Length: 384
Image (cartoon, rainbow, N blue to C red; front, top):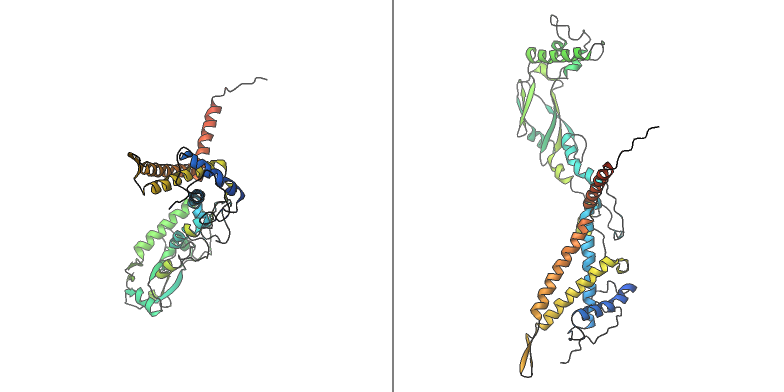
């Protein structure tokens, strides 16, 4: 079978590439034949025949442009993913200028706010546990089950401590009456305490601090040490409650539903959720500058070397009169593999050097160098 090979010229028409991504790009149409000529001559034509057809050159050219775009936009996704997550997928981002924003940083921080009780995406609920005199331990898991809560709860706050000592300073009976008198804290025992802000006296802050410490010490020594301990969702109150210790017969607390910590973190915004659906398309060839096009030409050459190597590998030797001619399949494949790898590494290195991090670091270094240079300028003293 006499299969035609590259005749020395070509004429590109739309539909000649496998996918047709750039067939109607005017500049791609012009460059397709120029690249074909360039690659063929680099492969030895017309001194040697090149066992490729124009369709092979066009396919390699299209793949080279697409590979360049893939590397470029993969870098863009990596550099901007934190700002892109959740954005709509409807618009093409090829030429969009991505401004960093705090949206996803705040979203990632919500987990800490939830644990601190300062907001976040996990709801805090209020609960009340019926206390019984002479009963010290209560099962909060059983309480959750009785209240139709599945997945368990996690207690965040128990409203069991007495009011702060500073609230007990300003009692209607004169507050802390001194070392020889009756402390205000003595009037407000039990697990909830008391205190009013009805009578204030202008005193130095140091005096207030000393009184607070005195009240706290008084509470510790004179009153029962009301506290609690939670282990495995079983709360134990100290000391054992009596009828006089229970206000309305309930212990109040705040809790979260454990399952909501997981489910509330699952957001389905219908937008960008991962690098695969970031809306970047194939590049517009006309808009690629000379730096990018030169890389495309070289990568196209490496692809054609690879194709030619596989074709020549079909016959390792070709018989000619009185001897055999050995083809250079192994040389072509080795060179193509090395060149493709080097070109990809060069392109990625170039993109890394233009990342936000690298540009900011370079600007910071330039600022330091400018300050050092200015420091060497003599400081002229003017005498007027």
